[in-house]
Length: 254
Ligand code: 13P
View 1: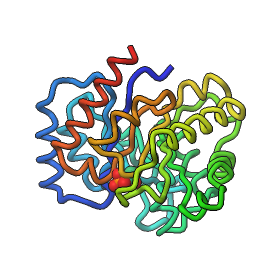
View 2: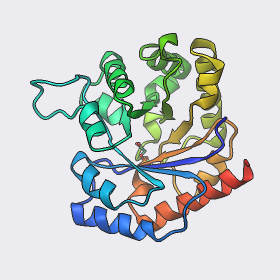
View 3: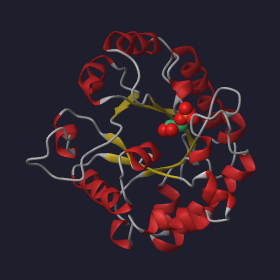
């Protein structure tokens, strides 16, 4: 079962190296959290931040190549991440889908690359505003899952981030009821199409204008196991508060 809340930050394309190092140094002073904590940072900061990060903090990538190795200029493979001891990566973030044309077919390849190289993927899924308005939300989510996961993956591990595209960077958050309904839908899909154990072991994170004001009520919902936080993860004090909220919910659940 998912006992520990996961507070995950996604810095996207922000911060200089010096700013990144100052952030990690400031974060290192807090007591060891009861919740799990992860930060997805730009590729070039992975190694320097991994070297100074406290043990409890997972430094993760934001993307990987769909290819194993070879003549793919500018790409970074899952195997390269493994070689510098990076153990997790986001895959299929809506900004990758929207601005870089990532299809479900490419995302499926990326997931397999992650699985083969022992890099834990956080698969990002979510509907656009148009899709929600047209009552296509469940259809879109089901399609995003069914295109990339099969029963053959039942012995693999991943996290899922449900990030409604209309809530990302807009200040508009899904209500806790809206988010819970979709998380429950995702849980049921995993249970029916992969396995019950798989569904129980998969953390489903909420993302989309998640911040210190709304995290507690979101993370308290039964099928919401934490958050993938963009803007509110850039400021260290706000990220520390999110970790405190993660601790509170983790303690409540245990
Ligand atoms: P915001 O928290 O800035 O809305 O971003 C969410 C997100 O995309 C995290 O991956």
